[in-house]
Length: 162
Image 1 (tube, helix red, strand yellow):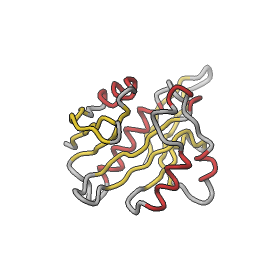
Image 2: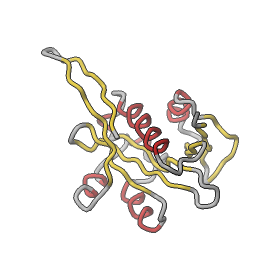
Image 3: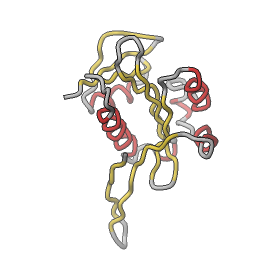
């Protein structure tokens, strides 16, 4: 899955592609080297924890977020075995790549991926740390709504698939 975003340069327009790729034996170390900004670290689990978690939670799928050939972020999604709803469990963009629109592109691509699954649920859920106002505003611009439910200190947001 990918989305293109044109970027102006002095010489020409360059198309940048955001791709979601499986985390494998070849790229897992690159994944665990990604970091968010220091003020964001209390809001999201480290990628090494997420990769370990994915080995013991059968529905969790870890993906690298690539800008052309460079991994710039991490996505993990999974399906709730009780109600069949898909969750975006983790979404992060490397600190040095934030503020450039790549998070928006990655979330767009993530939603497209989940919508394309044959057993797609009618909505997508994600958790946002209650102190992370930037993330709350970010997800709200995509149409995610606060459900009023809380889990593990996080606000649960829902995106209804139309």
